[in-house]
Length: 191
Image (tube, rainbow, N blue to C red; front, side, top):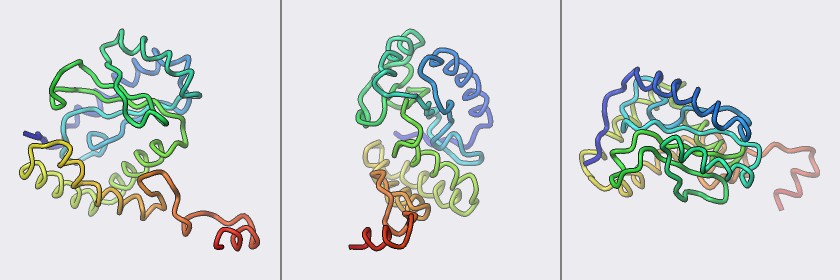
């Protein structure tokens, strides 16, 4: 069963505590800060009670050295979008719903970076979007106990929110959202 819980203001403090730890242990690689993303980062939004975080790193290859450091702090490394992120969860458990933290290390400006921050900020800024997303999440949690199905059904909403900001889920920027450098460059791109 997918557990979507009412917003808990304690999530912000839990993130701040973890942010302080991560800022210290990731210092050799950190660039761009540690950010609270996902539903627990949006005040007022019901969520699965898993802190989702993202930390910017200077270089993804060099940041692989952080795997051992984070493992010593209870994180488990797993593959997720390995071409643009190093992903972790905490604690080591068999059931996804027993996890308390998720962490992505990625280079600021990556597709993942843009997607997660843009989506979070859009919901923080628009009470109507927040209410629509919450209704969708609560309905899906009741309909499907399968996490993959739950996530897949949210994709259309996420895609729409990101598209309104000029971002597609695969990280490509739609042509209409690309700035033209000059008239000739714009004409070349249209061909």
